[in-house]
Length: 329
Ligand code: KG4
Ligand code: ZN
Image (cartoon, rainbow, N blue to C red; front, side):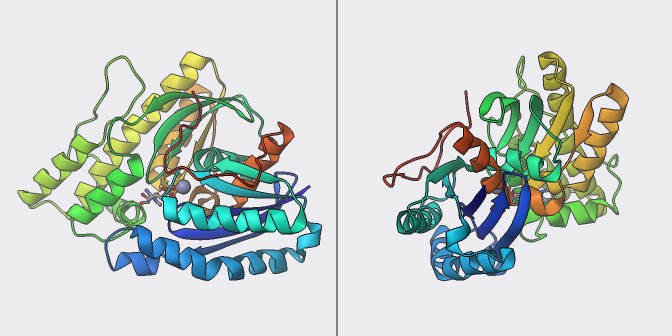
């Protein structure tokens, strides 16, 4: 079954074709980062306009790369939530047009469920149940993935998401945008133990809180002569510490033997190393998808759509977008 998926929830226009949920035939991403860099963050109106301009060409490239035409497709999938509403609308309307023109089923996909499904592409033998740490620019979630479409939130953020903490911290330190990859790179040359930044715990829950950490880092940097690389490495260590400990606590509590990671922050080398190390110490299998599948892309949306379709989770042409929408209970 060939699914063409469209992803336009933020600043990447992505179109991919995936066979049977696991085999990527094409995966095209047109990034807008160079333009948003000028403003130090994503400008929603610019994002919508760029999606409009590039979506036709990105779709055509995805078909060409796969060596297919619209006649070879079996379903159209699209990210309908959560995200920037104007950006989502472009993808959803384009998907509807394809579905209507070819008489194909339309499969809506929750963006964060897409991030989780990136793991089905990266690890062809992977099957639920597992616990997944989903960390992106807008979300930090620990999700109990009991089945392909059966998910429960075990922990979430009380304020800033992990990626947001990286981005805000980098901006406050004058390091540029997007903050995650910049801090990751600088941290490799810094000492993560140089400064002991706070590890916030929310009593009796697996929830996260990162806004206090950002403030602590900025205050410290203002009055310190430390090498900025030591400060970024210490900040990253504080974020990673909490993400890893909560995720493994969740896995232990659920009696789950597999831990996966998803979302843009999963590309972080410090997080990947710490997860892998803790997995070895606890006997829990840890897998982190390659970077290209961690950040926003449409292949992950097609993978999630395959399992939604299997459960008849399709929608008619009245499908609407939602800026926010829970991933599960
Ligand atoms: O999943 P994603 O591509 O888009 C959203 O759905 O938000 O995640 C983007 C986030 C940004 O906050 C970015 O700074 C962060 O992922 N990110 C990283 C790294 N690469 C991207 N954070 C830490 N380390 C990285 N290497
Ligand atoms: Zn994302």
